[in-house]
Length: 290
Image (cartoon, rainbow, N blue to C red):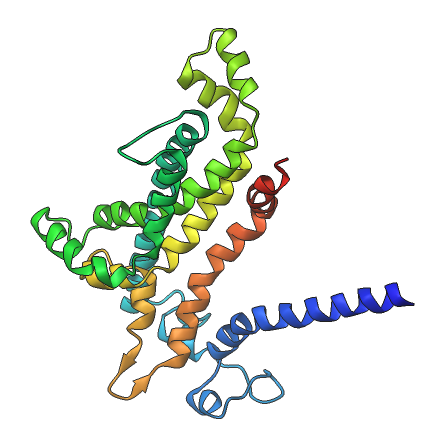
């Protein structure tokens, strides 16, 4: 009876937490199908509290009755969507490549820079997350203006790579630490050099961690708003900037903002579902160290 009560309590707690976590997604999707009156009255349950309407999706030219019509808003949405894909995927890929190399070096070799050793260098990389983005706003604005990188996807990719690189190094170092160094030594005895050992032996074994680091970086880059709003103009704007722009003299267009948010959430949900096993294996690999 005690075990049954304990298990029941766990399921109740998990169900409650799932409800709390998923309710914002539910609210976003349902709000995209409300009219102004339903939004203002806080009606939540479709077909019970209100009759669903395609108002939010129609404003983007994505409703069933407008999808085949010409729509400048839909074209803008697709441009912003493509910009988000290019910047997020490009920055995440670059961060994983550079971060994996840095993490492998910190895991396998001993360094000394001034008073700092490997542990100090690892902490230095991770400590970069402490800096608030607003502190870096003016330096990057001036630097990008001089380098002609304002309003460019290349500029966003480079900046996003820098912002997620500490997290990638942290995850990948933990991953490489779980791989015995004897494998490196055996590969070198068989004639592989350092690069061959890394790419042919270590990378396949660390693939779950690399996928987890890539997905985490993808989420952070996809949702980033501050630098995208600061450093872009007409050409390189991303979806978060377009979502935040759904305001006007009449107030906030909640239905349009909700439709945009739902469209922005969908790719991340699909990626998370398809690669769930890699995320779990990658993020829990470091917990099995002896």
